[in-house]
Figure 1 (spheres, helix red, strand yellow):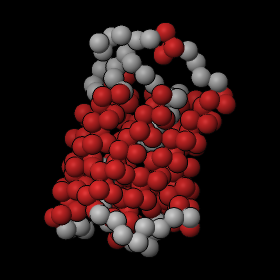
Figure 2 (tube, rainbow, N blue to C red):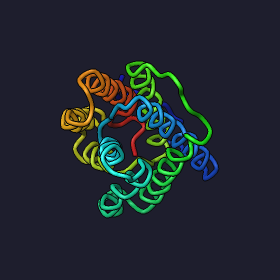
Figure 3 (cartoon, rainbow, N blue to C red):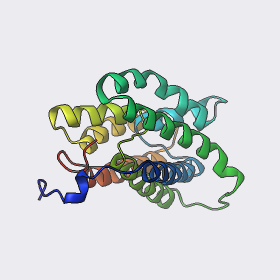
Length: 205
């Protein structure tokens, strides 16, 4: 089944479709970020590092996320091309902006940490798939994972899961055991969604 590619998978998206997809995908990811942040949980990848910086310094998640991604654009340009890099830069910038804007429009007075972490991770995973389908990512580990998948056939989801769990475990000094377990579960759910829906030869970037 992995090699069954429908004809529409090879059809290029229009500029309007790309713009709408990037807007929708980044809104989904940033909303998931808000759920995790309000629960006090973490995730993996560059977003996980941004969470750590947000919890430990005065920097907001959006600012930390944007700055952490800057070094990875060189690899993106060299290996993935300008179109991918521009879409990824726009996606990172929008997630950074939206994640700092959401609290002005929505606030949760009561949020069960496990529910928020798992559900938020599911929303983020779906947002990632939307971006991947339109040849964009959210930088950082995503760029590395997508490059290795395209170059060597390694599953992007599996590689990112390993990196994500390592980052979450390194965050033990920031969160308690309960939130750490919830964070690991959320990272596994997020990357399971990516592993199931973004495979070599299918939805490739």
